[in-house]
Length: 295
Image (cartoon, rainbow, N blue to C red):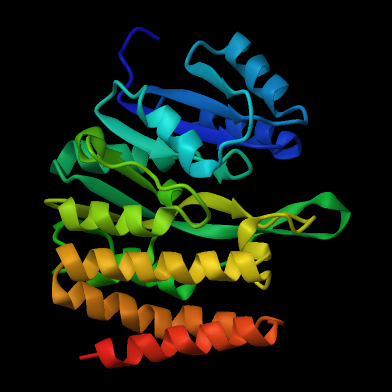
């Protein structure tokens, strides 16, 4: 290719060797070919680094950076952000799958509209017997955040977008990240995504899936371990942090939309888990914090 890349895709991975090749193949299958990818091996102890190195040896669009020890997903993404030189930036976790037209749809929308963020749908990639995976339907809150397709809307005009909080369903202008980085710890997407929404001059939504989010058969994803006290505490803290960002920097309508989403979706989901008594009390205390904020 002779044309310069439009978008950098940051791909962090830690001990995801069984899935990484499929994730990277999904990048190579993109209908928009003007991308580069920064692969961050976050101190893996399995074969993740070898998978990354192999694809980089075969395709010059890939660059590999290795952390000597695991530093966490937020730090890995931040390593990639420091190396971005393109107009746009995207993310893909190395155990997920980017659908073939994802970059075409998201980057293409920003190129046409001059908006700051394009937000797409995603589905869960659920395990089946025999080691296969199949995508589930788009979940209601993802549908609400993106459908119908929109161009050039503000956060005040489309506050339901705040329910789409994952880093990897979007393409954004790199300039938005100038003074923004991911925090350390779990659920690092929440507050950062809300901050980007508040700073975006205009937002586009794409009303079709762009990523399949893998639910690992072995149950090792963070969201599959939410009943663990430390993971639950991190989840609640991240939800609070996202609300705080919106209350501090966003329109009130976005605050209300996000609180309504959490009370409608997240609190019932967390209540349904097999929680220890102190964890269950933490969920109820969190819900009690939110109710006085409802207008």
